[in-house]
Length: 272
Picture 1 (cartoon, rainbow, N blue to C red):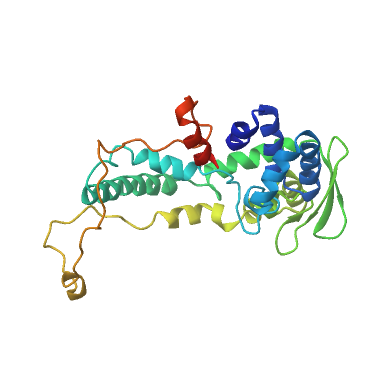
Picture 2: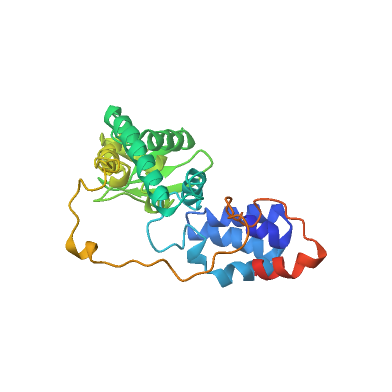
């Protein structure tokens, strides 16, 4: 969205791109993309050149779940900001101590949780239930159902082996939408059985079951002969003049950049 705003100076256009990116069904994506094509053909070409699989939920070939941003990497960069100017060994020790704290805190939190899925996913499930409130369900087969929403939209749910729904939410998120939850209620199937294993509390606990120990005093651990005989030389690079930069270069659209006349060619080539 920031790239679209930066290139085409139209916030309304970015919202249309976002609606297309988050669409679950191909039909919904095509509808949003068609409107976008009518508004700005240049933006459509820019997105098509990128490739729909790289920025849309419905065309992504793998399991992307609910993640369509790089926020995880940006948050990690922010956590390492204070240690970035440090020598490499100090940076590694900082990361080691930080991960030790993180793993310990998350191990305690997951051990206390008693739900089948994680608390955040439980909140998503409650939202999905509210969105399909007062929907009517009718039986097709013993494990297939038609769910009719309050606005007349129909969706078909199948609970054979794994959840399949024409709304495509589960197929992309691995979290059942309200249609599948209603179908499960009709046959007494527990909601926890419908979720992907990655959202289960046990998977959460297993993720942080390992311990990251603080650094040991030098010489307390045996070192293999292969490592002892290894000669590591510093890279042949020239250190740039001036004080090292502590802040990372912001992404397009994160801040307002004043484009002075003599800097314009540099910023133009950088954005391209």
